[in-house]
Amino acid sequence: MSFTWPLALLFLLIVPLVLGVYWWLQRRRRRQAVSYSSVALLRSVLPRRKRWQRHLPIALLLLSLVALGIAAGRPHVERDVPYARTSIILALDVSGSMCSTDVKPNRLAVAQEATRAFVEDQPDEARMGLVVFSGFAELAVPPTTERDELMATIDAVTTGRGTAIGSAMLKALDAIAEVNPSVQPVGDVYEYEFEPPPPTEAPPSTAPPDSDDYVPDIVVLLTDGRNTRGIEPLDAVAHAVERRVRVFTIGFGTTNPSELSCTREQLGGRVFGGRGFGFGGGQGFGGFRRFLVADTPTLMAVAEQTGGSYHAAEDADQLRQVFEEIPKEVATQREPTEITWWFAALGALLAAGAVAASIRWSPYP
Image (cartoon, rainbow, N blue to C red; front, side, top):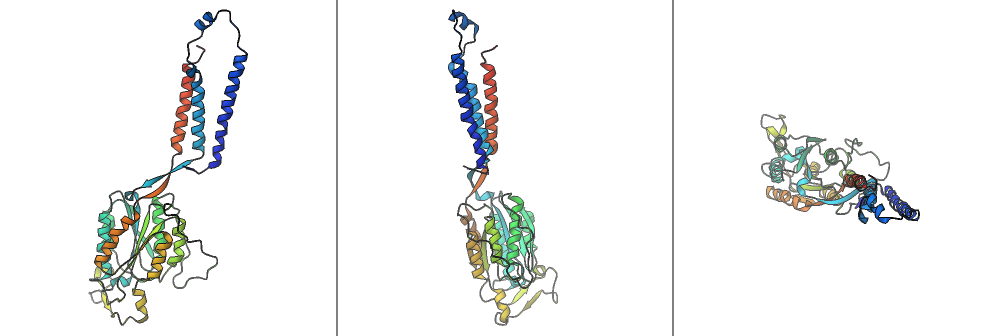
């Protein structure tokens, strides 16, 4: 058990003080006792009480003070939080590179199918949210236990230009903060569109917390490329570490991207000749090719520094397997729970018992 305000436990010093005053009064009372010529007459006047009845009120009062003193320190205990109580934020890359056909029919279609299966497999009590990102990140579905809206949104995602992986991480942290009061929102963080500004100060430490010190909520981030917009992922890591949120990263797609081909629905109505669009082959992308391949070193570093894990998937079967493995890695986490009200209620109950016992066995009618 730990305490938010440990100095408040000094209140407990009043317990031995009260006990000492009570002991002194008892000794003083015996010294001032009056001698009676008829003990039988005295016993007939006073009500009969057992020895423990005489001391019960003060005992209950002292126990009440102990309970209230502990409550003043705002005690916390660690308890296991089952996976079903976890909030899972899915961060899904919907950049144009997700239209690559190296995974048939294209990366986005396979990712949508695997994501839907992942959502369906989670416990009903688990809250799930969706962040979609291309050139910017957007919270498409806040954390909820309702699955219909989430599934419909996954089916309706459309592609855009750019890949803002770091921004997606920050948006996911803000989504968790909405449902977990122990996680502070990130708020407005300066984001650059093309080139990062020069650093003005050293970034916060990105050392991961102890293995049992994470919040139960997690971020599952799927991307097929590298960051091209907004805050860099490794700069966003510090915010996740500070909030004790694990990020599980998935690098999707092969290292040989092929022609990009999106459907009308994936383009959101932006069609060319009524048949979506497609261009180039894996060998014709030139320098653009590196943006169509997952940035494995960065994704591995994000997962390692936040306490999550990195997974690579090159086809539909591997991606489904990754989504099946993630819940096994999360398992049960420890979460501090404040139990102040337990001790406050116990203290009030004991105080009421002390008053009742004092009235019930008072030597004066």
